[in-house]
Image (tube, rainbow, N blue to C red; front, side):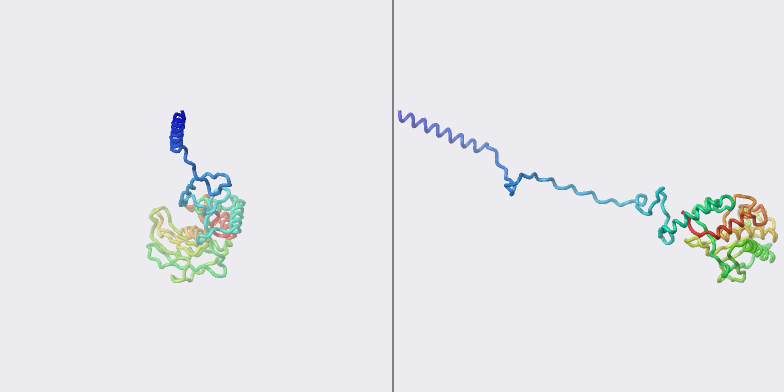
Length: 278
């Protein structure tokens, strides 16, 4: 009887040992906890996603030049400098004055046709006359009286009150304005003026070229030269073409002398500050 009980106990112990070994093999493994055992368990965060590298901004998207409230780019001033607030205010006032002049002058027409919205003129040269040189003539049909006719054309504009004077005793080394000749132009014209100016619209010099024959091959007379020269001196002073055929600055001169509007326009131009109006 004792032997049976002992055998049963041994069998039960064996079963318990087998069950303990089995449990130890299949039980879940315990995860290590954070070092701060007393605090709440923390969940590891994924590493931050790196930001994409900055992309180069194209000129069309750049922040410069600055823009106005209307979205129009503010043009850079001389030497790439943007205009100051005071310069922008002065330009605005000049535009207002031009609008107020209405049709009494053709300054507005000039600006519309120019494409660069720039007023160009000489500085006040009453005390320091602009130096003019007449290049030696080598064109057929040149007449000495042509020179006097050109001087009369200059005189018409100065007599109108333009604050500039001209010195006709210059030579090729110091001339600011050169008058030269050619037989004929290839296109429908008898005169041409090429003007140079600085970034601020101040005229620095000019070359006036006059033909001794008109586009049809007819010889020019002194009076014809005077009329053409009057138109070209208008360009020299900073005027562009007028749309009115009664003005001397009409592209194809239909009149022989300055109109009232020619005079008002040139005097108004010399009251304004030269330079860009954008």
